Amino acid sequence: MDHYFEANRQGWNLRTEAHKSSAFYNVEGWKKGATSLNEIELREVGDVSGKKLLHLQCHFGQDTLSWARLGARVTGCDLSDNAIDYARQLARESRIKARFIRCNVYDLPQHLKGKFDVVFASYGVVGWLPDLDAWAAVVAHFVKKGGFFYLAEFHPVVWMLDEKMEFIKYAYHNAGVIESEQTGTYADRHAGIEYTEYGWNHSLSEVINCLLRHGFQLEFLNEYPYSPYDCFDKTVRGSDGNYRIQGLEDKIPMVYSLKAIKKG
Image (cartoon, rainbow, N blue to C red; front, side, top):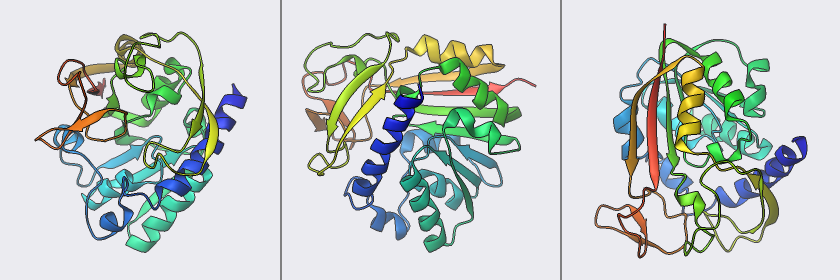
């Protein structure tokens, strides 16, 4: 398993260098005050002023720091060295108080103490995790009683499709590791980088049942027929500003979100 994590760490180090200057992440606009958060999570997470928020798999911290701008006391964690280095740089440049930790999310209890009002993760995180039960244990470890975990994520139906979004290629449920050779990145498809990545598909039932087993109560599960990001092939932008797969517009779910309360 360590081989998979190490390959993914190296891949995300390469991605980070491409992402920092990409139009997709619009770092310059963010530095001028634009939020990197989407309407879905802003509405569903709600007011975070004064709350302790832990962001798992935070990439280079834009969302983490956007929550801080809204009044949260934030900590972010990510596997990538380059991503965490850049997150710390953004925090310094923006004069935003934040803590960032470089480690595998499974190892976070060894590097961080304390409980949080909110544990947050979003968009392209679950698929890097081979063991969701161990992940849910980490989430439960950090959410205080009465606090909540919030996840906004690409729907597992999307991950069944091939890379060209034309036919079903992968299993809906976890059928083992998926190895793929990558060039470029979703944020810049022409970026001159090449790497091997390893991922795992997870059904909604697997995600939810793992959280329930670790002491959470599901408050809601929402599914959306669009993506706020243009990160898949054959997308078309709707009048609402969101993206759908051409030919499958409003026929398949593309994003889901959930909020789970830690029972106390």
